[in-house]
Each structure stands twice: as C-alpha cells, then as structure tokens.
Length: 382
Image 1 (tube, rainbow, N blue to C red):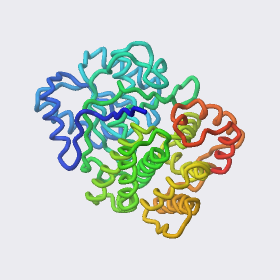
Image 2 (image 1 turned 135 degrees about the vertical axis):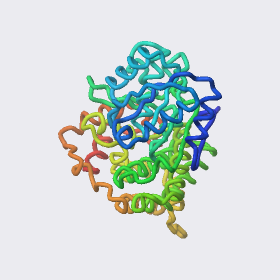
Image 3 (image 1 turned 90 degrees about the horizontal axis):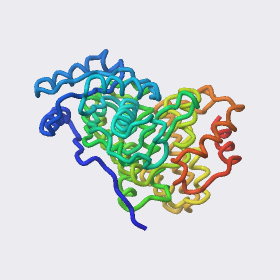
Image 4 (image 1 turned 30 degrees about the vertical axis):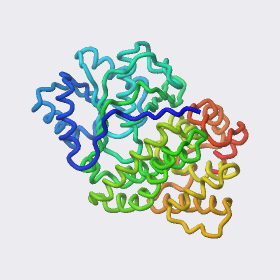
C-alpha cells in the first residue's frame, strides 16, 4: 500500500531560528503578514519583537491576538475579517498549538471560501491555503508542522478534526529560546501531548518504518528531557531536545495519524474547555490498556524507548511496563491523576463517546471500539 509523507518544505530548528526565518520570509517576497497569536505573548513583548524584526526587512504586519486556548469558529471568523480588511498576503502563527490551529483555519478559509466547519474531515479543501509561516513557542503540539487543525465548533460544543494537506505551513520554526521560562504546567502538558503523539503514531495501523523511527526517537528524547524542562525552565539543552522531540512526534503522527486518545480528548476539550495536553496525558495509559489487547509487541517497544528493562518479559508484560512508565512520567510532571479532577462527569460519558466515535483520529487506532468500550475507557479514567 502506497504511503504519503507530509511535512513543510522548510523547517528551521535550534537557537537563533527566528532570525533565520525572517530572512527566509523576506526572500519569499511577502509584503504584509497577519500575525495570529494570543494576548499573553503580546503582554510579554514576544509579538512586538517579531514585528520589529519583520519591519527591519520592510514587511508590514497586523496582529490578531484573540486566539483562545481552544480556538473556536468565532476566532477563525474574527481573524479572517482582519486579514481581509488589511489585505494581508500571508499569515504568521506565533505561539503554541492554539495560534497555529487558528491560523490554519484562517488561511484555509481565506482561499477556499465558506466557513471552517465546511472542511471538517480528511482532505476536504480543494485549494492551498494562504501561505503560512508557523513560529512555535511550546514543545508539544507540533501543529507548526502538521496538516492537522483542531477547531471548536461553538454551536455543537465539539472539537472538529480538520486533517488536510492544504493546512501544512510552508515554513516551520522551532527556536528553544522562545520556550525558556514557560510555566511548569504548560511545559508538562505540552510535553505529554508530544508523548501521546509519538505513542499513538507508533501503534497506528498506518505506521510505517519512517514514522516508527520518528516516534521511537521522540519517546526517547521525551523520557530523557521532559522532567528537566519542567523543573529547570531555563535549561536551554532540555528545551532544545524537547523541541526536537515534539517535532519528531509531529512527523510521526502527521503521517501515521493518531488514535482514540485524541479522539476522546478532543471531546473533553470541546465539551468542558479543558487543556488538550492534560486530557491526552490522563487518557493515554487507559487507551493503551485497551490497545494492548492487539498490539502488545508495539507497546513493548515503547517500554524500551522509555528506558524500561524488558528482558525476559512477554509482549503482554512489556506492554504493561510501557503503561506504567507512562503513568510514572505523568506523575513526575504533576499531571492530574484522573478526569474527575478535571471536572468530567459520569453522566456526560455517553455523549462524549458518541462524538469520539465520529472523530477522524480514531480511524487509525489499532483496535476499533464499540460505544460501550469507549464509555468503559472514559469511566476507567474518572
């Protein structure tokens, strides 16, 4: 079966990446950017710094800082109106997953028309989006380099999974200097998000040798560096290694897709407005308990990547070692122990399960679940 591999055409990683990116933007001949970001990054002066760098190259910019932590259809509409009013010829997303996803929604609708909800699903659009440069400030979502765009539909209270080759940025930037001193909770949540990407991609039915290599290396780097990145926020080496890890995990899931962790986490985020990475972290061991029924050998590989000694263990025992290692790392970075701590209610589970089974991310889970089984996983995570 033929496999397609999607990735931005240019990706800049490491210290001083932002300055390198500004030079590349100038060379591409763009004149006016819509910078899609959030208010905290404006408040700390990071956005102004990028605006100044663009100005030195003769590039104008307009700032849209109305992105919410779980970007909405309303956010996309507001940003699109600003883009059209100011006749911007490209988009820069600056931040973590939320600004990147919102920017993708804006750029996609700008060229394809309609509303962002028209593009829910896989490869629905017909035209490339407006050119998008994605500058990343967190090590987790990998949205700066993927074809995934997650937008909350405010009317239905669900997160829409838009998986489309036309949402791939033309340039991604991962500068660890932008990730220094990020709050511990954010670093932990985004790091566990990256781990989830890698694990889900590795057990996906669409995995291939390229995505396997990316996923396993990402898991190794996360295991080795996440705790330091959380506890020593100014550790530039840990930040840089986590930036590489989340990028590798992005390469893996961008092409092997994901599974029920994301399909279920999207519903929690849309229904309760919860942080995506935390939802992933809580659900990850529970979904892998379910997946261990069919892919114990793959999960045993995950255990090895997480530094576990599996010599003499069966595949099933190795899978359990992986699940325990995930739980141990999650606890080490102070992720909540269960969904109850996040305010999830048992009476909402049937609705959450209904919507999870409609999420495109679940299509590549190694075992297809019934509604009852999804409910059981949610319940186990309470």
